[in-house]
Amino acid sequence: MQDVLIIGAGPAGLSAALWCDELGLDTLLLEGGAEVGGQLHWIHHPVENYLGLRAENGRELRDLFAARVEEAGFDLWTGVEIESIDVRSKRVRLASGEELQSIFLVVAMGLRRRRLGVPGEAEFAGRGMIESAARDRELFAGRDVCVVGGGDAAVENALLLAEVCPTVTLVHRGKKLRARAEFVERLQGTHCVTVFKEAELVSVLGGERVEAVEIRRRGAIKPFQMAVGGVLVRAGYEPNTELLGGQLETDERGYARVNSEQETSAENVFAVGDVASPLAPTIAGAAGAGATAAKVIAARLNGATK
Ligand SMILES: Cc1cc2nc3c(=O)[nH]c(=O)nc-3n(C[C@H](O)[C@H](O)[C@H](O)COP(=O)(O)OP(=O)(O)OC[C@H]3O[C@@H](n4cnc5c(N)ncnc54)[C@H](O)[C@@H]3O)c2cc1C
Image (cartoon, rainbow, N blue to C red; front, top):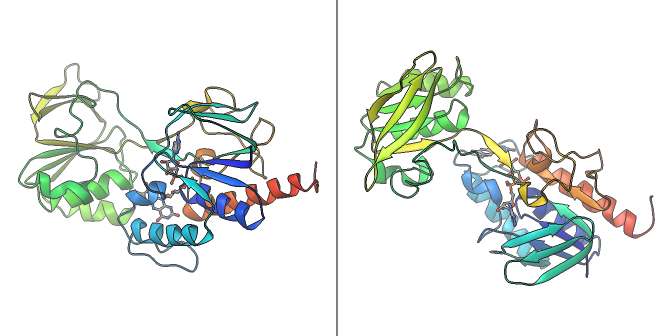
């Protein structure tokens, strides 16, 4: 029996664990991935908005966080597959069969990329579906590609692919791109990029690999086909709350509802970071929420409040 079980080792979970450890609580941090850091792995631009630090990219910031965590030396398990979470008893069952229990539970499972759910998207994973332009664009050099989405991530990836691909088609459901002005301006000056607004990707087609996409423009009855050798989807994010299966109050999109002390609707269960921040997902916010939850938990354990 631990004092605190924290699930998810992104900035929120790391901060919660660091604070819990410093406050003398018996803490275990569980991470599903092979490494800590969460979405920091996906940030390829310089991070300049985290107070007091400047990093070339998310990876560099992750390394700083990981070094601090290693120094603190609290219990951290990575590569953990959680089978179920029982919020009432605070029992977490792992796929390995192990069962863990704690007095307090901190949910810090962050977000995942939203999938479109169209035919071909899952089938062509690893065979023409591009996970990250920053990481994989050389593999797609010389191929025509399609990017889906209209926010910062979609436009940034389209710009990166435009450096090595003959044509990039950006497909966006809305009337206007939502990406920051700087990205949109750069896009407008990049001749190999075509933007289809008010259009949707309907399916991904191919044989061994991706060979084409079907796109439907708003108002059109039939989609049209376009030959491409790669497809990248950046259609927003969704919270990783499905393991909690209705045991916590969430909003209509599945984000955990919390009060100002990061408490959820379930007793002694806290949610921190993006999983509980539909409007303001930031590294600073995640780190702050983790600290708040830890301080409140320590106060509760010491009988200071409630
Ligand atoms: C492209 C991009 C650029 C960004 N740029 C900035 C920026 O410039 N400045 C800024 O402040 N923010 C930025 N952000 C947002 C910032 O990265 C997030 O707000 C922050 O990472 C949230 O931290 P978190 O710990 O709440 O969640 P996450 O970082 O999502 O971490 C959640 C962790 O939980 C783990 N997890 C999930 N489910 C399970 C499970 N079932 N079992 C075990 N572990 C699980 C995940 O593997 C992950 O490690 C950016 C995000 C992206 C995607």
